[in-house]
Image (tube, rainbow, N blue to C red; front, top):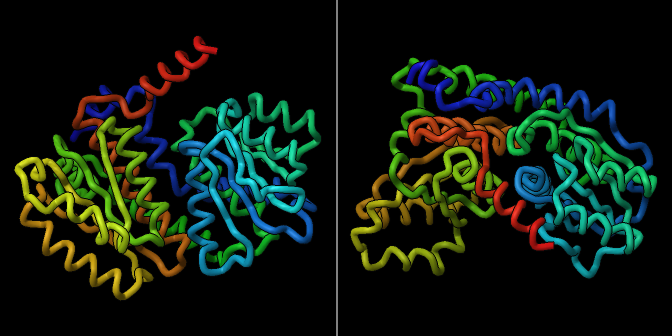
Length: 350
């Protein structure tokens, strides 16, 4: 792949947005530390809800994954117009919308305010910023001009930093440094357009013309979601996914008849050193059963010692793979035409 071919398709610079992920993560953390909200959310919190959609919700998924075996209160990501019934005055609610105009997040924000929850907002501005100001609610402002999904380093940094007072995770300062270092090393390899052994480009070619199926452990469900979303939004390529061990109790039977259509399925298995020993064994057995019938089976190993670094390292690969798959598909990775059409149609129907 040449730079000329890339630039002919990538008219809005998604390549540069992906390449700069490590720098954005470093800057996002620095900005978040400066913008840290003093006094929020206070004592006696009974749980935290991150309300968001799309790229603005992925940070919440990562927070939940990091908090799973550490937090003493529930951590939930709400992708809806309404919040769970248990949300009340002692609940911390983070309303996250990069544009500030996501209608589901605005509705959840109003729901949280009406219930007297302890609300904080993350956005570049828009209606969410206006409503936060009107209700004297803190706003952590993100840099504008980035595709929401490409702004993950900023939105994640803001979310993890402002929730540090709740001690939901075991993330340490050095974990941020490790995450920056690892993704920088990955970028040095995967940004090389001329390297025939570029792993992201090779996987993109494997997935071309196929339907990616993403498998992972339940602990890496956030990475699984990110992979599928990047395939959809960047590459405009339909993808599905599931987590083990649940997949072994139902979805595996969808492969049982070994029909010819299964050759259209290209499996990408995400693996991590902390996956349960039995889940690791299940994945190996599942691979032996499905590989003869799928188009391909590719495994991606997370990198790093901290869970934050490992999650981001395996997610970052999806940024590159989906970018290159978009170029191979001859589709601009930045625009999301159907989403824009859907939003316009919803406005007309009001």
